[in-house]
Length: 274
Image 1 (cartoon, rainbow, N blue to C red):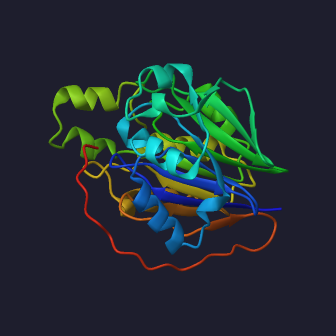
Image 2: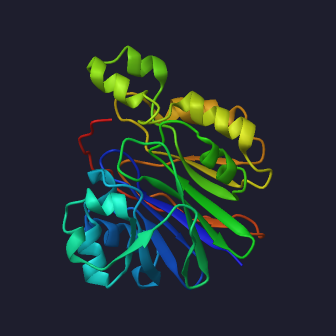
C-alpha cells in the first residue's frame, strides 16, 4: 500500500498539506482560500472528493483562515484541540468540529492520525503523524524547538514535512525589530535551518524517503540555502523545499520506485511577515 503527499502551500502566507492513500486523504491546516486549494489540487490531479477530514495544528491565521469555507463546501469534519478552537475565529465555531488530544489517535478510513503536542506560541498546538499500514508520514511545522515529542515521532517517519524557517545570520542581520527576532528564536516560535538539520542528522529513520522542508521565511531564508545544507548530508533521503507560492509535486511513499508527476504552475507573489 502507498501514501501520497503534497504541499499545497507552505509559509507564513498560508499552509496546507495533503496526505492520503488510494481511497481517502486528509488536509493538515487550511491557511489559504477554498478556490485556490481546489485549483491546486486539480493541477496535480488530486481528487478533492478523496479528502475526508481536516486537521488543524493551531489557531494562527496562516494555518486556519480558509478552514470554515472549505469544510462547509465539502462537508468535512474538522479535528482541532479545545484550546485551539477557543482561540479561533474565521467561522470555525459555526461548523462541525471534533476535539483532538495529545497522542489520542483518530481514524479516517484506513488512515490513522496521531496528534502530539509541540512547542509554539499558541493555545494548544499540535503536530501530526499519519499512518497507513506500515507507513508513516509526519507534518511538523511551527515548532520553537525540536522537543522530545518531535524527536520521538520524527524517528519513525517514511516521509515528513519539517519546518526550516530561518537562517540565523539572515534573521539577526535583517530588518526585523528586536522583539520579533526574540519571538522567532524564543523556543516557542520557529526553528532554524541549523536546528532542523540537527534533528535530521540525529533522529531520522533509516527509511526516511522524503523530507519536505516547509514554512521557509521569505525574509530570512532562501530555498537554495536550506537545500544546500540538507543535500550535503541527505544519504538516501530526497530533499524537497516546499514553495510559499505554489503546490509541490505529488510524492509517492511506498515500497515501489518513486513516482513523480511534473507540473507547471504560475507563481503568484504574496506578502509575508516571516
